[in-house]
Amino acid sequence: MIALLLAMTLSTSSPTGRVVEFPTARAYVPFLKPSRYKGAYGGRGSAKSHEFAKNVLKRCIERPGSRVVCVREIQRTLEQSVKRLLEDKIEAYGLKDQFHSTNTQIEAPGNGLIIFQGMQDHTAESIKSLEGFDVAWVEEAQTVSERSLTLLRPTIREPDSEIWMSWNPRHQTDPVDVLLRGKDGPPPDAVVVGTTHRDNPWFPDVLRVEMEWDRSRDPEKYAHVWLGEYERKSESRVFKNWTTEDFDTPADASFLFGGDWGYSVDPSVLVRCYTVGRKLFIDHESYKIGVEIDDLPALFDMVPGCRDWTITADSARPETISYLNRHGFPKLVAAVKGKDSVKEGVIFLQNYDIVVHPRCVHTIDELTMYSFVTDKLTGLVTPVLEDKKNHVIDSLRYAVERLRANEFEWQKAGMTSSATW
Image 1 (cartoon, rainbow, N blue to C red):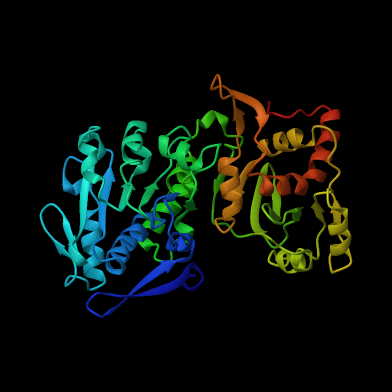
Image 2 (image 1 turned 120 degrees about the horizontal axis):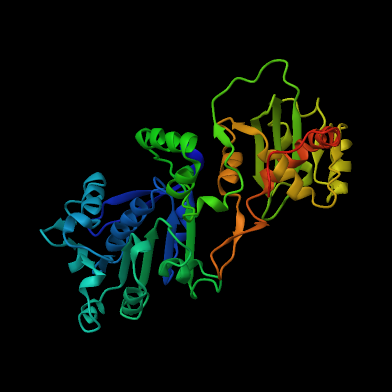
């Protein structure tokens, strides 16, 4: 896993002639090129702060005389700053001969300087003291006010100067999200990267235990804390009837398979599930973006038994279904769909107690985040389903389509569904 996530190790020659190697995670490669704005948002354990800390040292070595200000909205003491993190990196990379840490700042090569400040301590006049700095790193940027951004952005004005922001998202309305992730897009010359713990080659085991605990017991907290999703009102979540459990699939299980198609932006998906009474167990998934039609059989083969059982797949791509029928999947059939099939399929799934195996990470993500639309004017939750984060959900609807048809017959005989919209 580390080999897949680790993109490269950058070698930088220091002023003393020694080569310093900085390993870089693949997700953060876009930050290696100069950009006016660099934004890294995501969940806990995604190494955002560690990557920016390495980049501070790298810049100071490559550009002697660099002046970097590390900013937070509120900083009463240096213990609240990233000074300790930078000192740890200096120690780890053997750079104590080039960086000298004092009680208040860190001296860098070529009379460079790294300082630490709180934006709430600044006024329109005092902020001018930062005009000579060529990098501002805003840590915990989700807490930074609109006033602070308005003061800071025009102050960092040196040629080739950069403003870096790292944060764990809270709300779409937070000023940093409006600036770098808003509906109008980020400012010119901006690189914005979203990451999670899955992008961190050095994700520690102690955090992995915490992450797994949250994922299995509090999906909403897991999505916010570990996946970097915005905080949500729980009433907008579509599925609250599911848990994560490491279970063994019985040998006599009667499997249901559902497939969905994607390519450039959306994933191609296959899920396997089965029922025991009113419980729906989801034990395998395959999920990938950018899959050529020739490679779909290999993607589907990641799910055991997919060539032996009926697969119900999205009928919107009959040519894809025909291709797979001719290449080892003769039992793959098109979903019937029909009027209100999305709504009825979701209600049907809500009637089951859903149990998801921990290896089905994309299923967990979608069940966590799939939501009803919230009215932007009133803040009220509507009965309209959001048309995003639903490719695994669509696959599940297709997988249980035959069960839903059978239940319709039962309902005509007097049985009713317990879920309401």
